[in-house]
Image 1: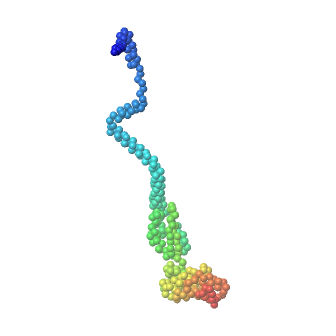
Image 2: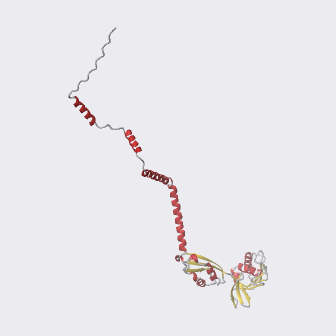
Length: 306
């Protein structure tokens, strides 16, 4: 049997020489003097985040975050509602301008800036306009919008010849009164004298002598009868030349109106119906028969000359 080989001897460590400590010291110094290598950015951020997470959150930080969030929300709301806010501003501005304009106009209309300084009367022929203006002089100095129509009416009632009237304000200081005078159809003779009346039977004036150019109206039943109303319509339908030559109007009913002209011509008119056609027939008959003693236009299609 073979005997095993002996194990190899472990090499002994060399004894340290005197220069060995110096090498060790230099190696350590070099290790210490080497600058630290830069760490990875991700590692640094991660450490920073972990450090921030470790720091406690204060109430002030929460308040700042909430405030920043509200501010951002308001900015978004303003951005999305900009158009609607612009339309609202335009509408409000327009309404404000209209209200201001209307309010200013109303305030100016009721102020002394638009007070009556001049009164003008139009349409008066038989009445002197200056007399009517004097009767309305109390309205001078009153704002145009505050002219009292009831006072104007009371003042004009003193003039029976005025049938209707209207007021027209002409800013800034003019007030115009347009009147329509009553048209007299003749005079009614009575114990008091001669009373000038219109087609409605309104007494316009009374004189002791018959006024020139006005026919005498002789109507059975007086001014309140249907015969008078029919005679009034007939007189108003006459042409101006025939109306100027009229001296007498008679009627016992509404259908037998008879006229007398200054030449002595008698005109049998009949009722007030178709007065326009009858007036044309009478004018034509007078031209064709200037010496006629009577003309019957009861039927306007055929005038009977006598």
